[in-house]
Length: 149
Image 1 (cartoon, rainbow, N blue to C red):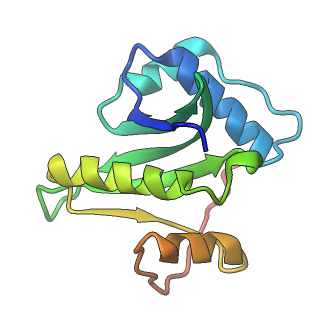
Image 2: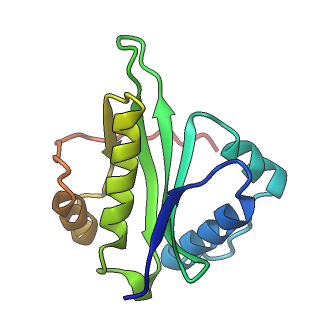
């Protein structure tokens, strides 16, 4: 396999962030997707509570994840929530997703975070198997949503 570079994006890497969003569009089969405006995306990259990690092969973003830092009221050590993770189909099952998980966990450990967590749909056996294979510990929870439209 070709060499893979995995890195946390900085505020000056908007081009790579946009490339990664296009990976989401492809992998999640987002019909009629409209890219958010660049000023908004730039503002996300500049935040200290939003992280983007990407995997790059031959100068092209092929995978990545987004995560949010959640400050707690009962602990000074924040939690980090992995919101989305995607790997282009042709690069799946080659260890790229596991490397992304390892990288964010290492970064968060060094930064003094308490825990990293991610949700997966009960029906998504592939995601459940993937997160188990990365050392994730499953918890039984019910997720409630409040649609606001």
